[in-house]
Amino acid sequence: MTPVVRWFHQLGSPPYFDRFAARWAPWGYGLGLAVMLWGIWQGLFVVPTDYRQGDSFRILYIHVPSAWMSLAVYGLMALYAAIALIWRIKLCEILAMACAPIGAGFTLITLATGSIWGRPMWGTWWDWDPRLTSELILLFLYLGIIGLYHAIDDRRAAARAAGLLAIVGVVLLPIIRYSVVWWNSLHQGQTISLTGGSKMDASMLPPLVAMVVGTHIWFVGSLLARARADNLRREAGKDWVARQAAARGARQ
Image (cartoon, rainbow, N blue to C red):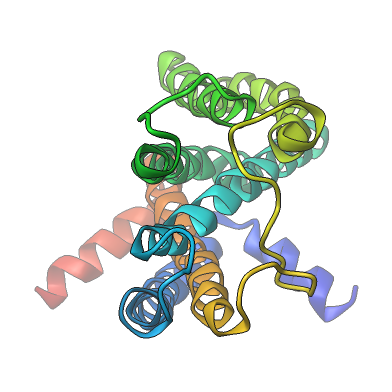
């Protein structure tokens, strides 16, 4: 067995994962927040004003990373759910369900910032535009997965049911991604590319890259923290949890 495969097997152990998450979650939070603070400072106060949209364009430094994360987190959640259903790996069930509230948060931020941005650009807070409508459906899908998971007492059965719903909902992701191409839409087409071909001025891209990287790192920290909490709830009553609680109490 190679060291990498051995490490993945060890990571599936609840005590080992608890130690891993406890060690790295704070790093994810701290480093992600630091990168995002630099990006938001640059985006709000350093980059030049857009010649068409004025300063209102600056909301993209929150809107765009959140929109990308709303899709990426859902895709990762569905992947974890598929692995859990096929190979019955409990850690993947936990990770899949930990993704849902985080993804819902990013989706809510996307809708809120899009509405704020749309008011001066479109003259309305909301329009039943294909991109906006499909993103709203994504939020309802996240909330449905969260609700289903908490509606069933058996944690493993709940995770399997909610995971199946997550897998079925993957069909929505390409609809959101290509909605501005497939249908007439108020929402602008793709103007930003981190790999080249962007229509934005080059000076506006570094803060956006920082925000995208920062949100990904912060997500890792948040995912580990939420998964660790769920792992501890599931393992309550086990000897290793009792020993950990006793050691924490002794330190206090």
